[in-house]
Image (tube, rainbow, N blue to C red; front, side, top):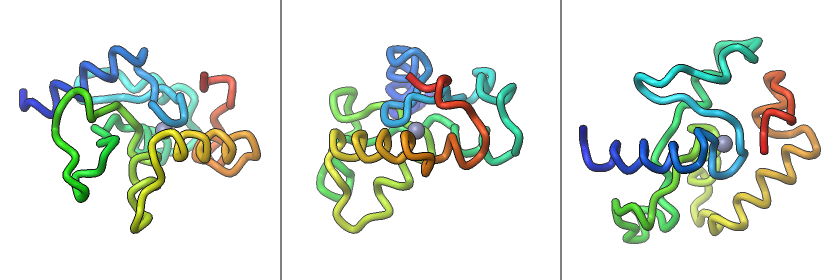
Length: 118
Ligand SMILES: [Zn+2]
């Protein structure tokens, strides 16, 4: 297993299998997609795949170390790095939670209940 994957897996376990940003249950290779049971669309499992999220982006010199990596779902990870200057992790998390509360984040778009999130 590659080092980055090991870190990702370790972080996912430490986070109770939930995304650092949105708090939804994620899945990873060989780990059953917890969220699949709640899904009404194939989009959900795909977007809730666990990814290694660099708190300090690689483009800004962020390292592949346990200290710099959290487990985040593909959707949250992509949405943060879509911006030219990504929000700080704390700001992005606040942004995600705010969007979820107002029904404008992945969960509500594809029919997973917010109660699934922490
Ligand atoms: Zn997420």
